[in-house]
Amino acid sequence: MRFLICTICIFLSYGCASQPKDERLALDDNKIITRFNAAINSFDFTSDVILYKGRLTQKESIVFTPWKDLYGAEYCAQLPEAINTIIVVNRSSNSVHHIESCGELDAADMMIYAIPSAEVEALIPNIKVHAKESIKVPTEASVDTYLIWNGQKYVFTGPDETA
Image (cartoon, rainbow, N blue to C red; front, side, top):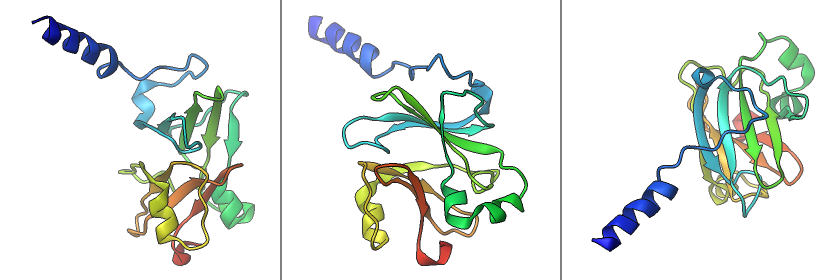
């Protein structure tokens, strides 16, 4: 009986704990599309990854623009302003990353997923990911694309037909 009670206590303290909130982020829970933990910018530590309907206004966040880096500012300027963003709360470095797109995250049924970076490296030649996991970003054209950490910044990549 004592073993059962201890097991339940351990389960409640570890398994059912809610995701920690970062007080620096004033996020509206109703605007969180999906949220998960993944080691997307480290081999050792997980970050809180949030697909969010809106943009961050906190000045202390680090902004990354991997789609603009790939397609160019002129391409992104021709599109309507993006609505959804990815927020990464890196607990090991106590930093907040705000990843903006050119609208690729705005599909009505958009979901993002963490996958092992080894899978991305096997699918896309000449890619070296500097993290345990990457973010899979499905497209409306059913072509899987990926957001990877190259050791310095997030890079958007996919099969040759997306570049």
